Image (cartoon, rainbow, N blue to C red; front, side, top):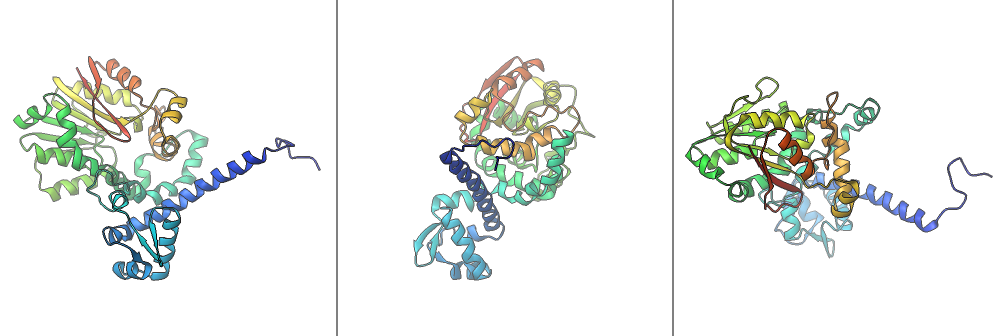
Length: 363
């Protein structure tokens, strides 16, 4: 019997086994991700944090859940080495794992993206169509939970690092905001960064711009809950950035690579800044070539996958979109776009972050 077209007559058995292992390892990761989503959603990680070794009966009682389901969940995450198995049917969430999975105030908290997992997977049929049409999906295609996932992913860093550690790295900005100036956060999402800055600098006014109606709805609710009167929120499709200098500071946190026309937005940012203003840029650490990204970024596969599902999809959600993607805005391109928009100075800031790089541009 002859081999089907395209299949070699002789296979490298080791490579076949290795490929099978890699493929099913990816499926195992997807299943573990689903378990992490459930643990976050059902409060299981929070119940385990600081509780010491727990059996499924103890955890089910603490969370008011069915023991048999809790037992299988614990066994899966134990096998995946997310939970530590300590014997006699008991598992423990280590203190380090609790920071990642249960403590939303810790800068290392990582459950945020898992909150939006059903929404991300739920658009696969539409993403398949995007491969045919070339047009991607805007972030609102993920619904309200998409905005929640993004918010929870970024909020711990904003709350713990933005005001005390990041802003002081931008010369003169804190002093200007303390005196009473104006600032804008472009791509503000649910407004967590805005709220932190507005609380820290009550003499200044802060403006948030975002095209996501779900994110703006959450931002309005959070601003009202915080009782802040120095924050204004804008949909740029109806209220674009000012065309004359107004702001002492403009920030863009992890959003430029998602935009359909980042060059146009950067020009608008330049027009809205005072001559002595600053633009603080936070975006994914990226390199100019695929080879560099895969060799120097251990999370490259994750980043390219997120790009197809959300980042590049958003950046191609309008005809002619730039389509930069998650790893598309490397430092050289960011500098080039800034210079083309009229920024005279561009430098990288010394701010430690596992995923993002930080830059400041000035007119």
